Length: 497
Ligand SMILES: *Cc1c(COP(=O)(O)O)cnc(C)c1O
Image 1 (spheres, rainbow, N blue to C red):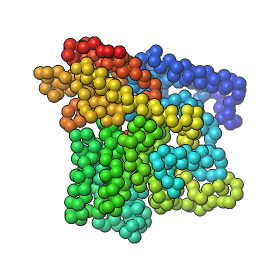
Image 2: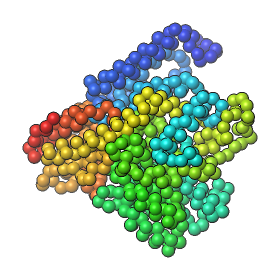
Image 3: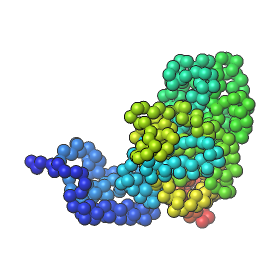
Image 4: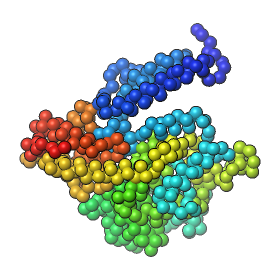
């Protein structure tokens, strides 16, 4: 048995390491360059699955062999969201500059809990850039997190803190039992599931999150919200916070933001916008009017790993009154005392005073690099293009005899093959089969959902790689799949390209 080399983890042979690393960079570039030429997705063969059942390796493997396995068994079987016709779950398509950023951030090795170093300044700057996109004032504060779910959790936590502070309650010391009368948070029936988890982990309980019905456009009914608030006051609840969604994940619906903002101001409620999808639409010149009102929020959640295509993970929580965020999370233990010089100097607070994490990765760099490379306007133009493409897809599908749910919200199209004579369950089975056939043929990926109690397939076009020609490719492939399953709509009318 060989005794492991007790020296550091650095390469024994730096040149050999460089060669292996360059080979992997080339593999990643080739993979991305060839996305269109490969199936969007394919299932994994047995040898690949077996590799991931291997036990903990106690001894060494040559780096070259490890890299070969990564290339042949991991890079070769991705989820598919980098592909131009991946329109399934709402997520970004990543980009190689961002990937380089993640690599360089890891190589930089800095821990972003705080301290006086360049990465810390980049983190601050990226948060300021994002706050500027949202139209927030310079007094705002924010924190980079893993994604929208945690960004929304922070919004609920700051709202809970503000509710308590306004009543002279120390909720951090005394807990939710001290919140009397009980605070109530509101969101639409179409809000993301992370809001339920947020109130659950904050100890408020799911019962404290009231779901407000939506209108035919699947946006929150502001009249119903006002009525619910009045009813809750009568029944002894303390209305505390409204979550408006700017772009629902289900259908792209945008709650009436200015109306809800005004209602919150009148009623003295915290106004949070779940803008994981919608905040970045503020960059898109032809559609930014759709999200007017986000700048009035008390707190915002946004998701650069969606429409800014940052490699996962990157979300951001923003709070208009930065002091409210600090009041919620600031905690400076003796081992983190600040200094005026040296490594611990350089800022009024630690990044850990703005959120839950102590140790943090250098998430900001991947976005800092790609925003500098392309400029924010380029991302805005790509968002405009995705929204146009959704309308194009809806029109093309309808022209081919496919039923489309109207209105089309932002960049999300919900549709189904109609089959006269089939009951709802059979129709759902048929449409799901078409969806799975498209996935298994590796041509395109869409998901499915329920709107107004009816089952639809759902395409969320988020990719910066989607070209208009992909819309025609999709419609033709969809009709082919439907035809193979014996359900060609309107006898499969030819699709104009
Ligand atoms: C994606 C999304 C979330 C959750 O964000 P993650 O980054 O997946 O954690 C929350 N709300 C909305 C509206 C979203 O679209």
